[in-house]
Length: 146
Image (cartoon, rainbow, N blue to C red; front, side, top):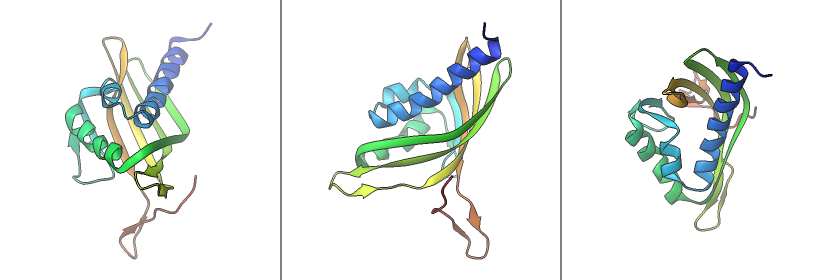
């Protein structure tokens, strides 16, 4: 019989899978259900932070207009679960095909997730996406593979 932590970890993994599903099906409504209403996101695009679920969804919306089809891949997801908070980290890549047929391979980023259990449901309360920095040039390194 699985422990409560194992059950919670499985639910959190399903939650991360639903991010990929929501992006690939271009379902902003489905994505909305994954985030706490007060989510704080440090995403790869400006500004430095997106506060609230509406800001997070506004950040995802351009993906749907830029790509005709979207692929979102998560690798090496590691999760640590507490009673009502959890955190995880992984590598992720957003790629797809533009409306003109051009294939975009995307880049691998590092992502950190923070989860809260709210009324029995795990939600993303914070996420942060980053790329390594080449200190000498001041530019992000976007050609690395996990």
